[in-house]
Amino acid sequence: MYQPSSRKEADMRLDSQVLDLETAVKDGILGGNCRVISTGFGLKKLDLKLMAEELESIDVPTVFICPISLEPMRDPVTLCTGQTYERSNIVKWFSLGHYTCPTTMQELWDDSVTPNKTLQQLIYSWFSQKYLAMKKRPEDVQGRVKEVLENLKKVKGQARVQALKELRQVVQAHGTALKTVVENGGIAFILSLLGPFTTHAVGSEVIGILVNLNLDLNSKSDLLQPAKISLIVDILNEGSIETKINCTRLIGMLMEGNDFASQNVASLSLLVGLLRLVKDKKHQSGVLSGLILLKTVCSNESVRNSFVNVGAVPQLVELMPGLNNECLELVLCILELLSSIPEGRLALKDCPNTIPNVVKLLMKASENCTQLALSILWSICKFAPEECASLAVDAGLAAKLLLVIQSGYDPVLKQRSAELLKLCSLNYTDNIFISKCKLTRTIE
Image: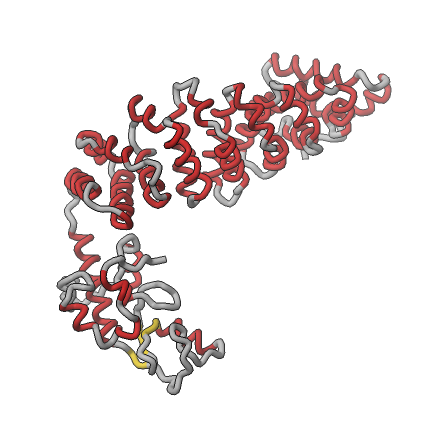
């Protein structure tokens, strides 16, 4: 959705769109020097829709925005009330049986619409100027970075958000921009924008820039301050999927090579936010990023109990079906880490789908997944052998273990399988257990 410019035109009444266009141009309300121009493309006319899409990040004058869709108008038409709308939007309004003006809710005494050619030409001219200026901008990456950094020091509010967005786009697109940011003191300034009064709009863009930079120890220490970590976690919980992923990546960067960072970073809010992220299977990149960070966080033993307490175990168990091998291996690794503490083993035992879901993974994914799955099953079967061993055998564990033993897997893995098979046999007579081991339950 386009954001109307915060300049003087925000106060213009929509019913003045026709009468005040000339005044608006003269007064510079529409950006100054807004006039019909030659595109320089000969007979090839620039497509307004394409220009609007490529210029989405800039402020568009309110007078160009359709009050119904809040998007720039391409074919503006004016009603008898003086209000102007995009033709397709007002036609749809009429087709729904409305015979009022959407803005004023006045009943229309004339349902005809008048093409507003003056406004249409002005819109096209304004977008053409902005579009051509963007296309003609020299590819001087160093110059652009310096210009944006200088501009950032002067502007606030929405203008600051737009400047940060431009810097993020440049940094993402050009590797040479990173060096320029560093050499011009950009990192320190960008870090200073994260504070107690930072809006999430500004914070999201700052984080989007930082994840593309090589941060030194001082910068990481600055970001590990409790207030800044709290802000990053808040933005992770409330941001778009792209922002969530950027926050996750940034926190991961801060924890690299820092054994104490987990304790400072791993708040309940972060753990809950990461669980929400990994459960959103519509965005696989978010699932992967979230699981990578959860694995890193859970590597610290002091965090595991907190993670179990927020209900992580059943949520991760239910997440497993349908995951690709990379994500599946990460989930199993996290569950294995949690199985190393009594609270984790209890949670795994109490989750009804733990044993069935984990048994299914034996010999089905990678050898590493099989190894992790065996480790989890061993932990919970040792923890509650009478209850869990029989459940595992009924889920087909015995047959799967025999397959592992007969496979070409690592000898240590095969030995663990034999030990688990022996543990599971303790609750059965020889004949019954042999019947359980028949290879009738194999990989589907």
